[in-house]
Length: 175
Image (tube, rainbow, N blue to C red; front, side, top):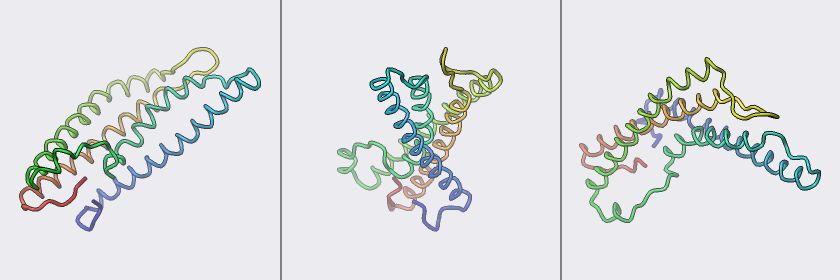
């Protein structure tokens, strides 16, 4: 929901979230080309691209946290509506409140738990992999921190919207 009732500061967060999703999508295409090049290099020239497994392993985590917040906000997450479709409007709103409260708590905990590790890997400039290619871990840890913080904010805003809807007595689709 990005209607006129959404504050300007929050619209900026939504734009940042959408932008990070776009970056994650571009990253997927880059990884796809790296993997394809690795396979063809291995099959045709017996010479794979060095470090492809490390690049892909680190990239998956980065892509996940780049796209997580926008995926949640736009309602493209897996959700089972079999039970909630049979509930009253008030019942669905209560279920949403519980879900958004749990989501907020989980991502706040993830943010708090990731902060010390992120600071530590930046101090150490930690890398993944041995030999031909070493992939830096500190940018990925930063993406985990940013992605979890952003997702927590979006969950909290959905929680706020659902609580308002419960007290107003009418449900607006806040998924």
